[in-house]
Amino acid sequence: YLSTATTIRASQWKDSLTLYTDLLDKTPDHYYGYQSVGLALYDLKRYEEAIEYFDESLEIMENFNSYHGRALCKRYLGDYQGALEDYNSTMRMYPNFSECLYNRANLKLLMEDTTGSINDLTLAIKFNDTYARLYNKRADVYYQSDQKDLACKDWQKTVDLGMLSAKEKLESYCK
Image (cartoon, rainbow, N blue to C red; front, top):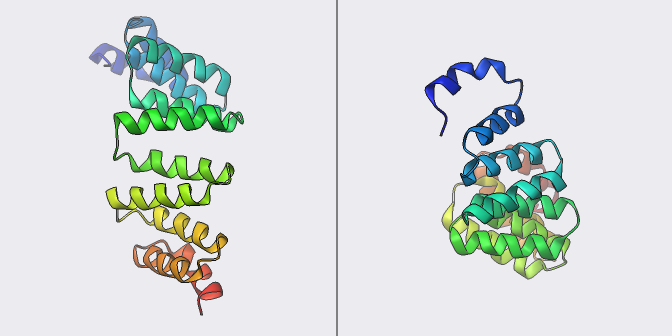
């Protein structure tokens, strides 16, 4: 999406928002520019503005990254139902997107849907079974829902996958 000339001028940009705004100026009819500005605004915690750019991106072309980005913004703004709808749209378009499943699982915890959270984490692990963070999160949810044996099993897997910070939980809660 970036031309050679644009890439060469990259030293002129002080941040990703400036870069992607320039990209958007050059390609105003392409969803990617709006999506990229939305992501840059999200990184700056300017969630309301980011949502506007994700909306524009989705008007041009339905795409899972804009739904996912908009869901993240809505979650931080407290619009849990709107975020859930956007996560669901993301998953319809990209059913094995483990990062979205992880984020939706966290949202479901905020919505007090422990079973839904565990189900999303289990599905994410099915698609990405070497990602320690998924096991660690599911272990935490299991532990919070009084399923200690399952929590300990997942914390052990987390440690086995190299996430040594889970070792403290394993030693504290599983011995």
